[in-house]
Amino acid sequence: MKRQNDLGRDPVFQLVLRLALPTMLAQLVSVLYSIVDRIYIGNLPEIGSLALAGVGVCGPIVTLLGSSATLVGMGGSPIMAMRMGEGDLPQARRILSNAFLALLVLSGVLTAGFLLAKDTLLMWFGASEATFGYADTYLTIYTLGTFFALMATGMNSFLICQGFSGLGMATVLMGAVLNIILDPVFMFLLDMGVAGAAVATVLSQMASCAFVLLSLRRKSMPVRLTWGGFSWRIIRRIAAFGLSPFLIIATDSVLLIVLNTMLQRYGGAEQGDTLVTCATIVQSYMLLITMPMGGVTAGCQPIVSFNYGAAQPQRIRRAIRYICTLCVVFTAVMMAVTWTISPLFVRLFTQDAALGAQSVGYIRIFTAAIIPLAFQYTFVDETTALGQVRLALFCSLFRKGLFLACTVALPILVSAEAAFLAEPIADLTAAIVTSALFAHFLPKILARLDRMGAAAA
Image (tube, rainbow, N blue to C red; front, side, top):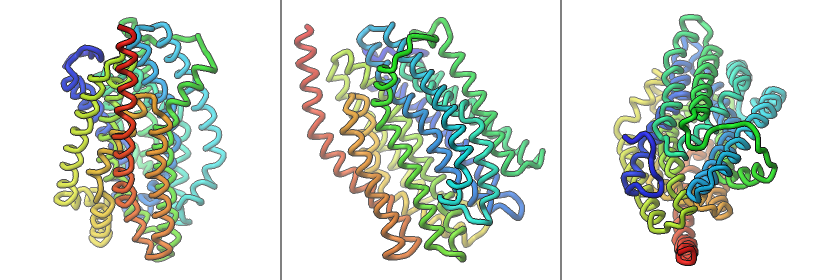
């Protein structure tokens, strides 16, 4: 595999594979951050199920906290790739330094805010008296490591957009592998339980953070991380570009919080904690699909953004076609996995036969429309890479709004369990709407780019 990719001249199919596969693998491995924690927690003697429910409540809140890294990373990296495509390296360096400053400020604000509000948030978002202690312990320790989490994720995007997909993968792999090693040490050997899982995660993120920052400071880096050249205008531009991917992840977190809340409320004292535990397992499985697929679509954004800046519409068309095909193949494979070996996945979390059977059934419902979801992910992320932030945002929020409406309405109208139907309903409907809009607008965007290229020639 090449160490650095030429986004403007390498064959598009090979380029897509070289960027997509490492980022896909990296995101798949990064899922282990949460899944390994949950597997160990679910198998804690005597308290496993309740502790798993507590950490499950934290999951969407932790993702919401980390989504700020997406606001900056996925906002700044496409802009930097466009400037690189135009040959404007000094401006690309300014974008990188401003993104670093934005993450620095955000991490401080979010750490203080979440520490002050965490007790209220946990009770609002699905914790019960039985699970609050576990949730509070995990979230407190995780929040203290916000700086490392945001820097590791946000700045890694700027490695990938320069063509260093291998280094981007190494950043994630380092953290995930270290987390897997440290979890049993802190949880069982040092007998720290849920607190040990959180400490292991923070230490792993510290290592990833150090690696990515040192990599961006290397003299051999085409766009090197420096201090200075700060501009409020650049930060606003980064935030505007990153708003769509930020809201995609942030609203995902909000929706999962609403799901947990509705399950707890309408499941009642008898089923509430059990349904939240099942939802935690279901969400963990769904991450095995959405995170790698998001790695493909987001990891290939630099190809689209760079060639947009270089006025190469044919390369953009080919890239989007290959990205979409790769996502469809992946989701088809995962659909087969769901209907064959998902029970084995569930057994990693619990040995309770009844709880396991429930979780398997909910997983199959939740993932029923993942193949259409491949089109949704591709078109939203690559529309963002083309600078069409409003269109991407509308398509994303349409899906989220539909999911929210179904999550709230179905438990009221049918039963608490019916909330799991919200995901396939939203995925299928949104994929149809997004595909139609993309088919309408993409030819116009690329035709305009064709005219720009002809005028420049």
